[in-house]
Amino acid sequence: MLNPAPTLVYSLLIMLPMLATAIALWAGGWLRRLYVLAARVLLGAFMLGGGLYKLSDNHLHGLMGPPMDHAFLAKNGLEIFAQFVGVAQLIIGLLLLTGRFALLGALMLVPMWLGIIMLTWSQHWVGTPYLTTGFLVLTLGLLLHDYQRLKYLLYPPAEPEIIRAVPVRTGPRGAELLWWLGVAVFMGGSLLYPISLAVMEGTMLAGLALLLGAGGWLWQYRKAAAGISSGATPAAAPLQRSE
Image (cartoon, rainbow, N blue to C red; front, side, top):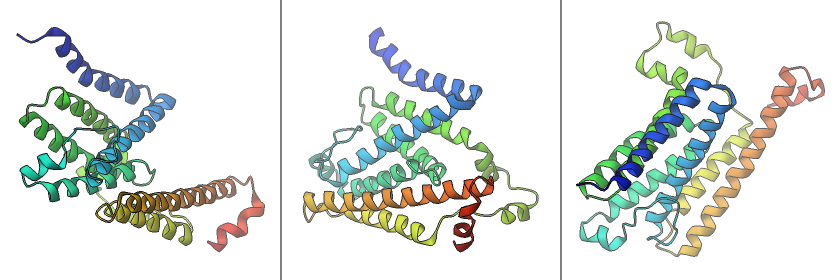
């Protein structure tokens, strides 16, 4: 007979995310924005932590387990697989923590959660499948939030020319290049643990600094562009034309 206390806790791990998702999407407004921001940050942090845990030989602990050490993986011949999953989790975490690529990160996260659920369920890990199912619910909530963008994957538009005519929002070329350089340095640094943990951490921090610098540059640019479009700062108009 199942203990009712753990059963209730496991049920809440799924029901609470479902309730939060339903309320936020129904209510809209600031509550929906808060839900989206919190879900992206939470899931992104879990993915970054899980990736770092695997790529650093379990030295860099994040918010997310499970405690699969390399002895367990080596016994099952899964070291390369663990590194692949770690890199994928880092990429998903970065995507979720950006505004532009958050939808792509949420899409990639669905098969990631499904794989983790199946793995933990087959290994008979207590509680973990329920926790990750709750995270899957939050991920599906992010996809529902972005349905207006996602729907074209499910239902192609009758007139694709309309989508092609929509301008793509970008920033200054220098900021774009700096952002991608930061991604390359950050992801490249995640693979440097065989050299040393210090080199890995230092390179990833350098990449993070580049990403933050590029993010600030892009934010300032879009803030100035928004002021120009509203007519609030006409003096900045030459800046927009020069980009």
